[in-house]
Amino acid sequence: MSNAVNNLLKALGEEAGLSPVENEHIFTSGRKKWLAGILPSELLNKSVKHAVETLVTLNESGEFYKIFPDNIETPNYGDRWGRSANYIEINNRAIAEMEGDRTKNGILSSIKLLPAIPPSAKSWANCVILSQIFPNIYGDGYNKGPFEENSIYGIKLNAGYSANIADFDIELSPEEQFRAFNDLAHIHGLKTGFRTVISADQIKVAKPYENDVTFDWNNPEHQELFINEHVKLMKLGFEAVFIDSAKHIGGYDMANYTGVGALPGYEQMQYILYEIRSRSGKTTISFAGEKSTGDFERYRKLGLTTGTAFVPPDNYDKVKCWSEKLKYDKDYAPGVEVSNDNDEGGRTYEERLNRINSILFAYEYPSDKLASFMQMEDLFPLRYDTNTHHLMMTNPSYSTDGTAQSHWENLFTREDGRAYNAKVGELFAYALNL
Image (cartoon, rainbow, N blue to C red; front, side, top):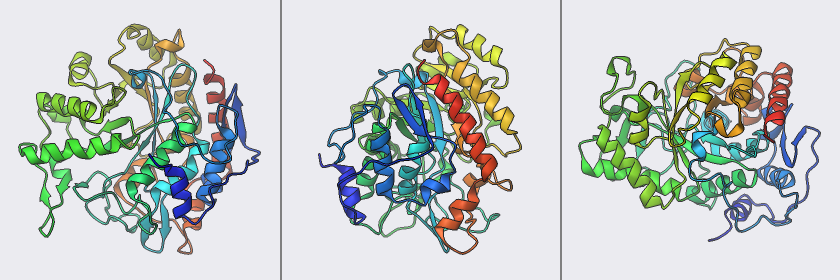
């Protein structure tokens, strides 16, 4: 297999040779290193090569590679790693390059942000979840006004990958770009995954020379397409899928269902998850379900690894109590949210830090830790007039002059965000050697 990172550098017109990078914002916890006390724009305004050199400089082995290695293995936490992982969702569309009305190259921006994601701990993994991989149904490749709908929850299958995310202006396939992202995440000590949707009316199937059709779970060809699209991504190095609306699979608790369209049946989804694992040849895949609360056995038998929104995140003692209750359940256990994709802002920095403290430390032994779920905003606070959910539903540019640099500088808060990010870094610094 060719070296995807070196191929990406070549496609971007860069030399493969690497040089060490100095940075005053390096946080250290044992042998683990990352950047904190930092503003995202300070990384997003740099080149992809600078990101690669930074990641190689920070890598846990302590060895600096003058050429990026050919073989990078995923961090090894066993097959059940997802049961205790911290899932950190990065809205790769929001941090993509906004040039005029175009949105592009979100995977390159995600690579640039990786050095500021804390690596995995001794006892459990950190996993980056990308919000978008597939094209969104309306307005893919374009940004719109801050109140014009451009939802990330409507996706198109059989149409390749999103123009928001892949770089289609270079001679390197989107698949190789994703492979490069995964190799770089792995050398930094991170697992990776992506968000998917299962509500039928939120999925379109592209057909050559025909109009798109609405996805139908009763159509065997559509089911097969869904499986194969996800298997392809697993073979590129991803190991986790966050499943939107997973709680309601098989018609469960439909009174609280807020998606649009039919959902797969229970046994049908069992088959789908089994096939994704089987066809990809990966026993390590973690399936995390949105709001899979209540009947834990139901979700375990479904094939999920963990789920959100059951354990109260603001109460350290309750998180620790549930950690104790569930410590022997290693196939499936619910997790704790710092925030989710429906977060509409308004939470103080202190409240977020309190939740992060709970998810990182509320257990008797590190092996008992519950999974957790965070959003980009929990590490890098967003500007005050937007929020996580708004950026999932719309795709505005905050540039004041039409450039990507201005968008990146204005998407996040400034010095108070830097101070908050340093405090998050301090919490992770205490946790990573547990």
